[in-house]
Image (cartoon, rainbow, N blue to C red):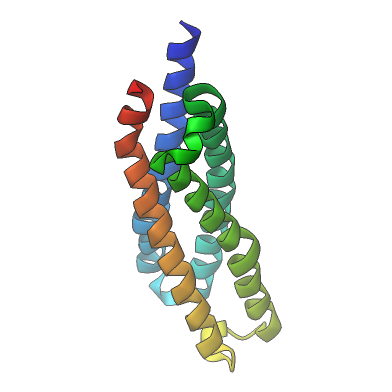
Length: 157
């Protein structure tokens, strides 16, 4: 009974993590920029907040999923599991974005305030980091989706 509840919680956390990536990055944020087309700086601030919250959710869910996989599902065999390594890579990408790229982009915006960073001398640098951030986010989204798909196999083992 406990194992089935724990497995269900594992699946819910994994789904929340993956679904969060997809909903925030590919539905909510584009909707923000579409709805606030006249105020792109505000849309950017709101989007940044969503991505930050998604980063914290990703860290929490990812850590629990990794620990459950390592300590309850696979033991030492987890280190030979593509699923486990996918979780670790997604966690690493999340940490890089949350603690490296996002604060850097916030600092760039603060450096040029009250100007919009897109109208500032830091425009090209900001755009380059935005591209890096977007690619990392896409990788996280794809990995998380793959983890959801692969979770049945992990739970069946």
